[in-house]
Length: 106
Image 1 (cartoon, rainbow, N blue to C red):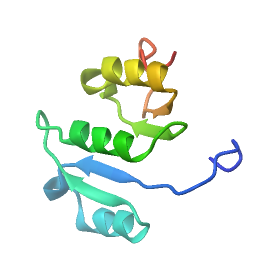
Image 2: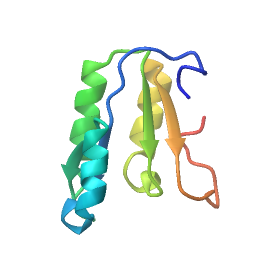
Image 3: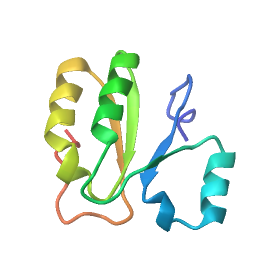
Image 4: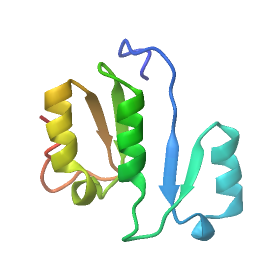
């Protein structure tokens, strides 16, 4: 899908979740595709530090995709500011259409 949109280059994917509550066959499937797995539990989110590290390692123009139904709770304002200031592209994917559009869509 990214190639069709004109994007190229390396892709890295990290999935965050309660890995202890995820069936082993799903973890194996994800890991066999090259997806990195990171343990986290509700209310203890480690993505912010990983996101900052990613931004530091990937100068603009760079694209990041967030797949989350709870992105508003953790990232919207800081990501929007950085997106606008530093010219990052951000794709937002979710499992259902939200009641209101995210501030990330600017």
